Image 1 (tube, rainbow, N blue to C red):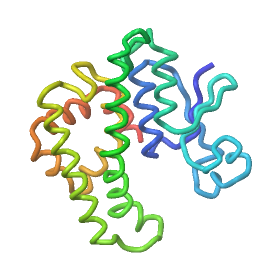
Image 2: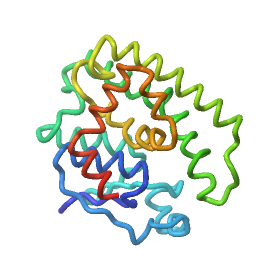
Image 3: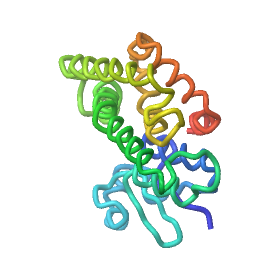
Length: 215
C-alpha cells in the first residue's frame, strides 16, 4: 500500500514532503478530497488528522503524522536503505548532531524570512488580506540577506550545511527558496557565490525538477 499524502501538490510544505519521497524512491499518492481548500481543512474530519488545519498529513498503514519536516525525517528513516542517503547512520553521533544543527539553521534563520517574504509579497494579496507591508518586506529581505551571508561562510568550508554529504537540511530549503527567488530575490542568492552554487545544484536535482513541473 503506497504512502498517502493529504495535501495538494502545489502547497509549499507538500512539495517539501514529495521531494523527499522522490529522493527516496517511495511510491505515494496525493489525497485531495479532504484538504484542497481552506474550507475543507477546517472541517472536523480533517482537524482530526491535523488540529491546526494545515497540509500535508502523512498516512502510512494507519500511522498519521503532520508537520512536513517531521514527515520527511520519518520517510528518510523508514526507507534508509533506498534512494538518496539523507540522514546520518544511527551510530554516527557526530554526524547526527551536525545534521540536527543544519536542520535548526534552516528552520530558525532561513525559513522565517523566506516564508514571511512569500506571504507578504505573494500570498497576502492572493488570500484577500490586503497589500504587502513595505516596511515589513524590507525588514524580511534584510533578514534573509544576513542569513545567506552566514550561509556563504559555512558553504565556503563544506559542500552542504551538515558537511560534505547532502541531507534533508539542504533539501528543506528548496520550496520557499525557489519561490522567493521567483518573487524578486534571486539576486540576494546570487551575491553570495557559495550559496548560489549550492542552491543551483539543489534545484537541478531530478526529484525537484519532477515535482516542480508537476505542481
